[in-house]
Structure formats: structure tokens, C-alpha cells
Image 1 (cartoon, rainbow, N blue to C red):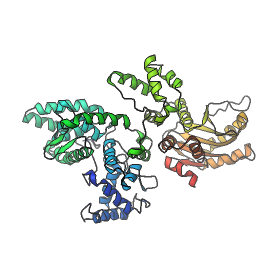
Image 2 (image 1 turned 90 degrees about the vertical axis):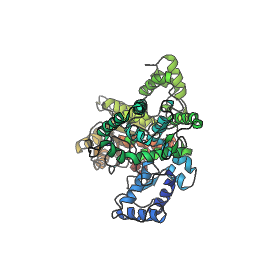
Image 3 (image 1 turned 180 degrees about the vertical axis):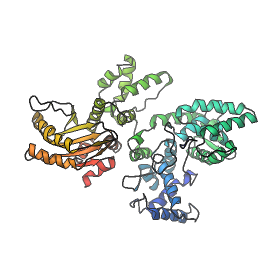
Image 4 (image 1 turned 45 degrees about the vertical axis):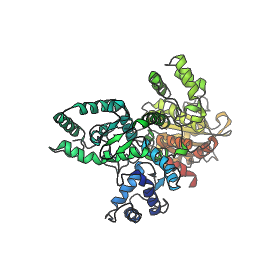
Length: 539
């Protein structure tokens, strides 16, 4: 028996999404406008239950340990109305704030339903158990509506079919296979149907099994199916006919198909959870008026061009912000494998600053990089996207000096910052020996580079780091090798660096301000999250 989830799940203390806004208001009251720490505070969790009960959202039965409050908060986190920050506080996203302000409530709730995906910030939380299997990559509500809106299924799907077929889909591309299985199920006789259900229950149940496999499976997952049917009904792209099925009536079929296509272009599957649950939630929680186009803008993968568009994605996966590149630069990259006509078409569409957004393909490419030199190159690309003039592997000032830094940032007309990219897993230890090397060789060897002063240094680590106290020792050593200097450094994880760029893009922070924010982090501190970087100037 697998200990991981093989089927969809949804936290459901309340099944009807019409009450999402009310639950959010109750949470706002409980946490004193989201100012109180939530994580580990059981008294506050119990208080949330009391507020929910007083607001008429749940029965007046308060748990001993606040588990009921945590379940309601989990629902709000699942839909990215709030997220848990690195200080343990629940923070509202822009969608959450829009609901609290009474702005476009139905549109924002529908958007959060239709962009809900597995995995997401809450499902990756350490407290969520059991975890989903690693291959999950699906938007459940969108998948279900697309499944229903097919002539092959006569534009309906029953709760039983959702339980045994839709809930077992792991990826959006499973639509065809699920459709075929439902058709086979409908054509089978009673005994054959029972056998099919038993086989599915045996293959997909992560709980204890029994001789009544199909019946137990239906009982365990039926309420999840019912909840998703209600969620889909709320979007108005499908109708939940109680006691019957989820249906798309004839008058809605064309509009539903069109809306699904628009959603795929506007809200592609997000891999920001690889950066951090917080960055995922903040982006997934953008309200309908804070829409950020993907890096591929409004390019729709037409059937006859899907393969060439996929190839374009692969070729440009090395670059975090495609729109910082000229049309000629994009064209040169695409022409490596695409035809001249296709390369020119995509280059013209992609070189458009209105679609300035993090390249989702870059996220996985960068954070899972295994090659040292490529990691350095990609780190430099992020720094360029932030707005810096970056040089890779520049020669040091002294003659016949072998020491060479990987990345040099021209911070302004008078100063430079040198960056060392480290591929150590699971942790980069900034040892006393490495600190001595930085302070006695790297920094003095680049002092005076192009007539500029070395004003800061840093390490970007592919995973975790240690040895933060040695940053100060580098400053002290540099003060000896470069008298009168006060050069300070930073340790920054790749997740935090990428998250910083993503945060700046989502919040439309201009180039000069994001450069200033980034350089404010160089205070002999280490950063594991983007939240710590953003808060750095407050310290």
C-alpha cells in the first residue's frame, strides 16, 4: 500500500465556495487583521473556531486542540487567499484582499477555483499528510470542466465516474485516457463495471484496503468529488445538477470551450512552488485585476504548431526574463533548431515588454541544474534580469594572477560586487579557509577593476548554506588587504535569488529600485527566502 496520495483531495470544512469570503473575514478578525502569529498557536486556532461559530459558519463545537480552525485555514490556503510566511503569520494575497474589500467577489473566487493546482503551496506544507505522488501536475477544476465539455461523453459526467476516473488523473494530459476509460465503463455490463471499480480502488487507494474495495473507495472519495462538482458549478462553466451529474448544457458549450482556452493562455501551470510555497501563493493569489501575462504572452499552442512552440520553450529555458532580450537575440537562439519562418514568428511575439514575467521554464531548469558552469551562467542571467550590468569570469586586475571570480556586477559607475556561485548539495559551508581566500585573494585582486572599487561580495548557493558568521571575517580580512575598506557580503540561496526577481516582476518594481533593494541585502547576512531579502532593509 502506497503511503502517498494517488487521487485528488480538497480540504473541505465548507464545500460551497460562496462562503470562502465569509471564512476569510472571520480569519481576519481572529488574527487581528493578520498581525498575529498563526503557526503553532493552538489558542489562536481555537479562537478561529469560535469566531467561525459566532459568524454562523460552523457548529458550536470547539475542538480541544484547535484542529477545526487549522482545517478552515487550510481551505483558505489551498485556494491561495492567504499564505503562511516565513515568520509563521498568515498573510492575505491580492485575491484575498480583493475579497475582503468586496471587489469582484464572484470573479476572484472563480479565478482561484480555476487556477487551483496540484501541487500548490498548502499541499507542499510540512503539515499536509499524506503527500501527493511526485508526478502530479494538474489543475483539477479546469480538467473536470474540460472533461465534461466533450461530445464523446455527451457533455455530462456522474459523481461515480468522477470518483473512479477523474480523481485518478495525475496530469492535465491524462484527459484523453480518462475519457476513453469512462466510455468503456458506460458500455460495460454491471459485473464488468464492478470489476473495473475494484481494480481502480486497488491501484489508487492509499488507505487500508478491504474486501469491499470499490465501496470503500467511493465512500472515501465521494465527498471530494461532490465538492469539486460544486466548485465547477460556481464558475458557471458547468452545471451541477444535484442527484444527477455535472453537465455543460448546449447553450454553454461554445463559451466554456472558449473560456478554457483563454485560461490556458492567461494562467498556465505554475512551477513557482519550486522557488518557495510563499512565492507560489503570492503569484497564484493575484486578483483578476492584477493579472500578469506569462512570458509567452498570448501565444496559443495551435495543433499544427504545438511541437515548434515546445521547442521554443526548451531553447529559451536558460533565460529567466525573455523580454529583456532583443528580437534579434531571441531569433538567434530559436534559429538553432527552428525554421527561419517559425523562429521569426516567435521572436516577434516574444520580444514584447508588456509580457514581462518570469519564464516558468527557467524555474525548474535553474533550481535543478547539475552543471557548475551552467549554474553560473544562469545565475548571471538572473542578475541581468534584475537590471545589473554583469560580466562572467572577468580577468583580475593583477598581472599573472590566476584567481578568477565567476560573476562580477557593475553596481554603479564607481563600484563592483563579486559573486561566487556554489553548486554544493545539500549545503554549502562557508568555511574559515574559504573566507580567508575571499578576503585575501578575490577581493584585493579585483580592487581597481576598470577603475572601480570592490564594495560588496556574495555567494549564491544552489541549495542551503552555513557559516554566515564568516562573512564578517571576510570584511575584517579585506580591511587589511584593502586598507580603509568596509566590504560586506551576503549568502543567498538560488531559491531566494529567483524569488527576488519574481517578486519584483509581480509587484512592478522598476529596475533601479530592484537594484537598490538587492544591494541592500549585502550586510554580512545570509538569506534562504525572498521574504528575508525583502525585509533586509528594515533591519
